[in-house]
Length: 423
Image (cartoon, rainbow, N blue to C red):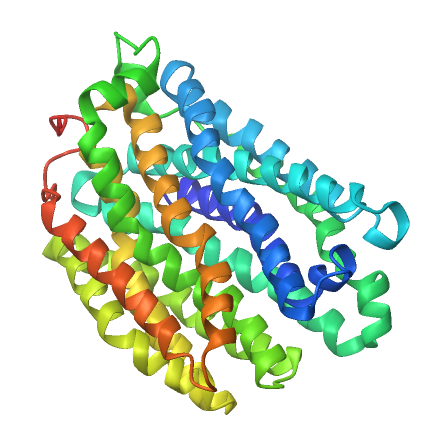
């Protein structure tokens, strides 16, 4: 289990590095380079729109790679998705700007971002299921939390590279070529990930299945439609909170408050590092207290913290901004530390790769795709303190709280025998 957990963590870290480096670039530099005819705010909105395309592609990736995972095994999903995401990320770093090729530049950006999202849509399901289906029932949340640490590692790595480049290059150098370096680095990381995953064994639970679903997505929609919608709605708050503090806050602080890129990236990275370190501890609580109570507690904390968070961000003081972001991410990880165990336990094994991944990534569309765009627009129309952004995030938290309340508890039923929740 330690070797498997380490390989899953490293793989998700690399895949999410690819995804997050785009979000950071969208907040800091892509608007002026690819949408120079827009106003600064409109350019940022347009860059965030290309960022959102990746979320729209993720459920499609879940269907595509979920089919492979439920029909051919979890392991092939990890290899193919990593190749696709890595190649498209390297290509983003090679796209000429609007000044060189005109409208073809943002179009290429959209296509490559779509491919990024397609690959990431398959990555989560494969990595989580391979870990969850190997793990002993009494420690499934703990071992399944390690792939959930991967996004934090990927985020810190992506933003760390951006931070070093931002601090060592002039604004002109960063805009001319510096922002491309993190995208090119994705190629090296992808090769390292493929090496790590080359020795992983197939899931024992998959090997036990005698009757594989012919078209997994049709079976999921027919027998688990209500469950998919509930899980998507429940997870929306996690995505909304995470991308509000890691993507929107970068643009808001640097453009509206005049906070330097270096200071803001440092605040966000420090909070994400704490969140990543606490993920396994929160997962241990999930093994003791149950999945659903942890999700309800985290969702409630999100609803209560969003307004204080935007007030702390609006101060422009690094320590206070850090505390606001940290509080939001602690509420977030209270939920998401157990999600990697919770979602697979909700679905029967023969369609688990498709069902869990589609529900997870639809939550990303609801909460992650629109949040940077909506928050930027709301903050632009508000005063110095963007209370409307806090209200928007609180509303999503309340919606997710209702969805979590309607989902069943699964602990301590072993994943191999859990009955499907139909609806």
